[in-house]
Amino acid sequence: MNQDITYRILIFDDDAFIRDVLWRIFNKRGFEVFTFPHPRSCPICEVLACTCALNEACADLIITDLNMPFMRGLDFLEQQKSKGCKVKNLALMAAALQEEDRARATELGIRVFEKPFQLADIKKWAAEAEAKISPRRGLTNWHLGHR
Image (cartoon, rainbow, N blue to C red; front, side, top):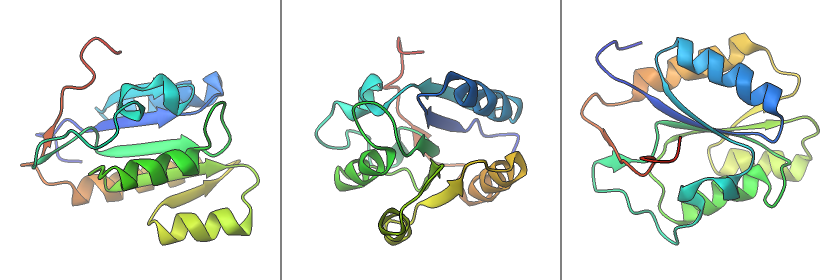
């Protein structure tokens, strides 16, 4: 992990325990962590198009559960991509992933973690993502007032 960079992750899961475990893992890694029980509880879901400046993104990583209230995680990630979201490191957690959803996630470049997943696999994904993040990238301040 590059100690000169503060990474940011958005975590979406309707299970408070999973949100807490993931928050602890990423907080310990030095991430700025935002957790949400579903996509519609996050301000970035409300915008119609990505509002990030040219060399900025809303986060470095996004990880979401598949089945949540109001919106499926895969639909949310696909929606973000269609809006022009610049977050490159996307992951989906699912207990029962249908083959159609797996194929869709693969086509979109989304990493899939099947529940129950190993925390070591999440940590490895984070380390791989960190290695690819430019130290010159910027993060937007969409979150001010939304912790």
